[in-house]
Length: 178
Image 1 (cartoon, rainbow, N blue to C red):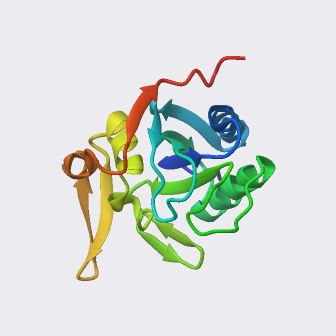
Image 2: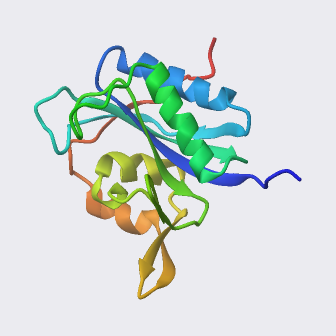
């Protein structure tokens, strides 16, 4: 029996090397994974670093995919792509060739060892919310309140992130071009 497809949103970022090329390669690699189909890509945004600020600016975007992979298998695939594109984890929030975060996996709320969905800091990050609101303003974000899972739309959060973290829209990416 095949798994049903789930709508998932991923946040991608890079601030080392040819940032744009790395992001395009990552999108293509994601799309090539059996069980993943890239369905939409936000514009490319240049953003100031958050947390550890003594580093170069990032290029960030959000990718919508349809997947039949479980959250854990999807995470393993994103980490493999990061490694193949030179990701080395040294400084928390530090410089990186590529970062792929699972932001939303359907309407699931998951807190498991090594996997938290929705991404625990996504609501604090304009570099996530602004591109997410660009491609999916109506998407619902689950949160837990009094042991119940509740939802709100990304468009309800996006106005509060305007002007934060130096998020600057650059352009659309032509990731499908050969």
